[in-house]
Length: 193
Image 1 (cartoon, one colour):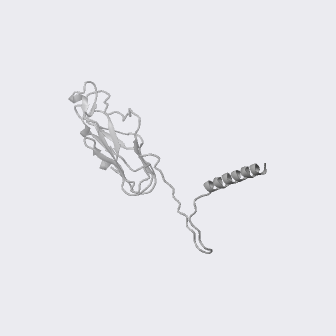
Image 2 (cartoon, one colour):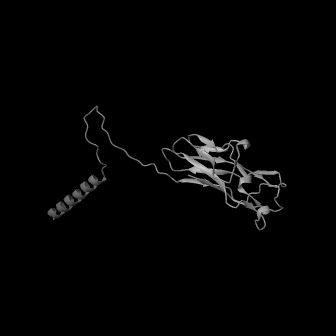
Image 3 (cartoon, one colour):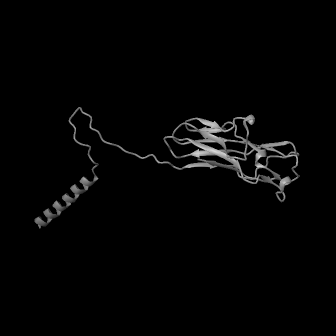
C-alpha cells in the first residue's frame, strides 16, 4: 500500500514538474550581477485597410444657366483614405469626365455639352490627417482644368503612415451657344493610386 501511494505521489510530482517546465517563458540566458541581460521582443503593426477614395452620391445638381453662360457648383466632399501604414505614403487622385460628355434628350450634338467644356478645380483640402505634404490639383478657379483628359485632383507627395485628405471640388460648365433646353447628365470619375 505504501508503495502504491509512493508511486502515485511520484507520478503526480513528475506531471507537476512537466507542467511547470512547459509554462515557463523562454529564457534569454543567465547573466552575472550588474550586467544587462537582453530579451528580444517582437510585435507586428498591421495595415487596417488599403488606399481608397470616396465620392459624393449622385446626382449632384450644379444649377442652371442659359446658352453662352457658365454654370458652376461644388461636387461635394471627395476623400482619399490611406490605411496602408506605408513607409512612403504618397498617392495621386485623378479626375476625368466620362466619354460622351453631358447629354440631354437623344444626345445629338445640340443636346451635348462636350467634356472639353467641363472644368474642375479642387481648391485646398478641407481636412487632412497624418503627416506629409498634401497638394491640391488646382488651387483656385484660375487654375481650373478641362475634364476631357485625366487631371490630378489632389496628391500627397511626402510622408509616411496612415493619412487622409478631403476636398470639395468645383465643377464649371461652359454652356455652348448651340445648347438646347434640358437637364444634362454626365459622369465625373475620380480614382486614386
